[in-house]
Image (cartoon, rainbow, N blue to C red; front, top):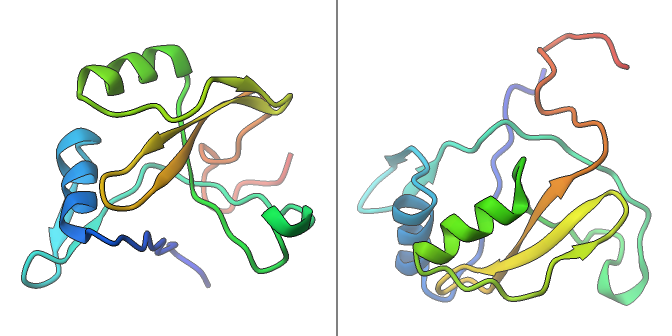
Amino acid sequence: MIDAVHAIVYAEDAPAARAFFRDVLDLPHVDAHDGWLIFRLPPAELGIHPEAGPSAPSGHHQLWLMCEDLEATMGELRQAGVEITMEVEDQGFGLVTAVRVPGAGTIGLYQPKHPTAHGLAPGAPSA
């Protein structure tokens, strides 16, 4: 039924944000038309959380980048000139921080401590 997810990042400076995903994160992409880049994302998973008040009301959605080693990833990003916008916090489910996306605010980055679903084969039984 569903064979992919198309996520959208809204940016006040779309060319700068696209350059970040293309040049810094080195994500493969296609040019849909006239520099409108569509990026291939790493494997993904979807968590459904209860609303958490005004900062995360029902209908509010977030996009988080995941990594296996947060400190190493932060080091690589810093070397590429990326601004880390918050101190690492242990939230129980994982270690979290955020990075600045040029022209598009910040995006979360985390190293999960929970079991992940992004490596499951399509049609695999639930654990």
